[in-house]
Amino acid sequence: MSELDLPFGPWKRLISAQWQEYPLAIYSNPENILMLVVFEKNEGKIDGMIVALKKVFMADWQLGKALSQQKKDITSIIKFSSTGINDISFLMVGTIPIYVQYNEESLIAVLPDQFKVLKGLEDTIASAAEATHLKVKDLSQTSQTDIQEILGDPFSIFSLLHPTANLKEQVLKSDIEVTLGVNVQGGLYKVQLDSLKVCQVVGSNKEYNNRSLQIVCESFLANGIPVVVFDYSNAFSGLSVANSDTRNFAKNSMMPIPLGYPYVQFVLGKGIFVDLQFVKPTEFNDAFKLTGTDVGQTIEKAWSASVDKHFLSDLISAISSLKESKDISHFQLTKTIRAIRVIEKTNPSMFGKNSDSDLLVPWRNGIGKVYHVKLDSAYESVSNLFMVSIIRSIPVPTMAGANSTSKVALVFEPDAQLLSSYIIEKLKESLNCQWSIALSASHWLDLSIIDSPTIKIENVDIDAVITISNQKPVKIEVRPTYTQLTVEDKTT
Image (cartoon, rainbow, N blue to C red; front, side):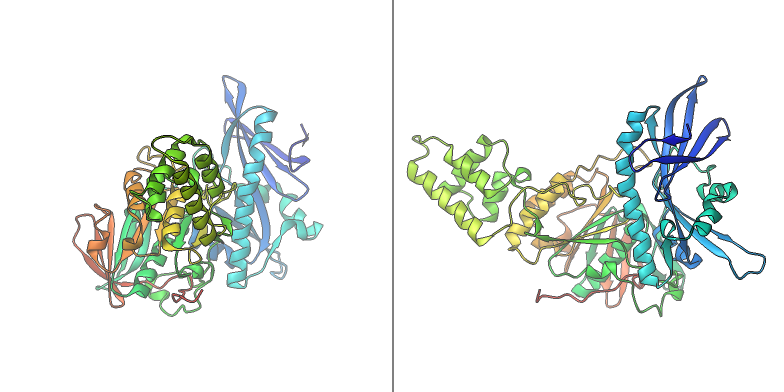
């Protein structure tokens, strides 16, 4: 079939070919997005397809080099002219191939999600170009002559799509190493990415602690793992901005071109809320010091009686539906409703149902993206309720098999002693899930709430002492950050 009537189409077939024992086809839509389809045969009959989307840009070849910091699936190609004057450089990013059944319905169902992932990758390219001041242009915005240079040449297409790659499974390897700094002998000090799964940072200097946490964030982001940062002080907004100071990059064998990461900011009370559906009544009572009171007891009874509650108004409705009895008087019911309304008035727009947000499924785009959650607009008690509700609402699967890796990293800017006991308990319960956590404090005793960390980072002046499991501690000179360090701002 030379043309497919599918979403984001029509899709025109550019190439049909045979790759080993598999037939494949490459299609292009009006925006010059490529769709690679590899057909899987079983006893001579096609019963499945491997589908991936690819997008090509005209770009400075150095941009691909800069993006290699983020371990993206990036391919670049330079077409040289005989004179060397009209050389053209192309750059391509693509989605992780996905297997679907061999039918039109399966293709229609999978394409919207693939396009969401591709959009995230486009944002990465745009951010990289802006940070490095390198040129990039969407292929759909170029001349027909330039388009034909790549899409009109089957050899160029195959050099970009590298169909000999393993399309069925592209997962992060468990032996990925990240650099934390330089040891006393002057060599690079590297650790496995998996060792950052439960990270504890300690030191009397909050600025140095945040620097170490930022390096931990970068280690995940550079390997395609999104990071959710819960931040009281706006200390991590610099993750979106390239570090302007590159003096010590060479010493740490860092790429000479710094790069900010794809970034989105959330502010509690402005589009993101405490969802009561993911909060326990004992936690709610604890946050507002109602534990053991008649108001708190009424709230607990109403909580269990209501199945669907997100807003404080839902809780008020649940309380109003309770019948008077010898245990609950009319005065007690009205008193409890008044108490909830006071909480609502003193915490306006803080409670509600969260819409379908990338924050709830942060790995959806398949890229290392920063989800920066600002909590400075709320009381500490409400912020704790928000954090536990978000942690519970993220559907992180449990670890399964040796190749399992974290889908998301949760990083907490507030010192560990400021986190409520129910947040800590939830984190401890979920240590076998596919996420990583990073906490900091001024003293080790405040971090003992999470035992058996996989790595400890103790900041000593500008240096740090690293301890992994039961290994001997190693002192290092901490590497610079690729992104901009932001001084803690308590005025916002």
